[in-house]
Length: 163
Image 1 (cartoon, rainbow, N blue to C red):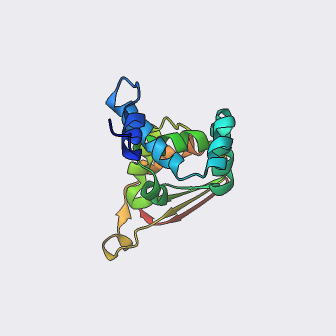
Image 2: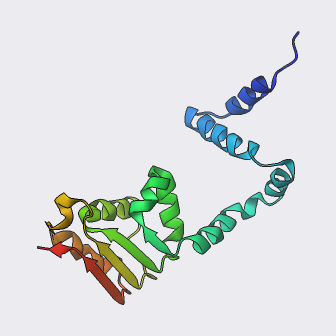
Image 3: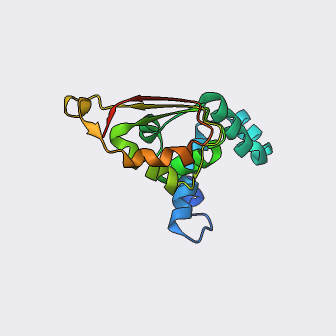
């Protein structure tokens, strides 16, 4: 009988005893990330796994005090974006929105369950950068959601024409 290869053991780890295919896929993704760590880091993570969510929260709060959904959508999608927004909703001090995507960005916050960004004091809304949107006026109605979403807003800067 041939000895199991590294690939066989990797497959065995991926299949595991999970009930659903999604769980298997998630476990496989975690396995890929963990394999990138050296054994010391793996042991540290194993020993302190219960502190990992708090560590990520702290790290994210240090790195992201300004919410820019336009840039964040390039980095995170779907449930990962929602998790980040839910965890960070009290950590943001400022927000950057794009007038041409304002309704879409408000929808993303709503889908993530974010009703308010209580600690945001500064908001910048930029206009379009392409020639077709540069001189265009944007509808006023998406802006009506801002007072409820940004209830502690002190500074608002809008770089777009509003109808």
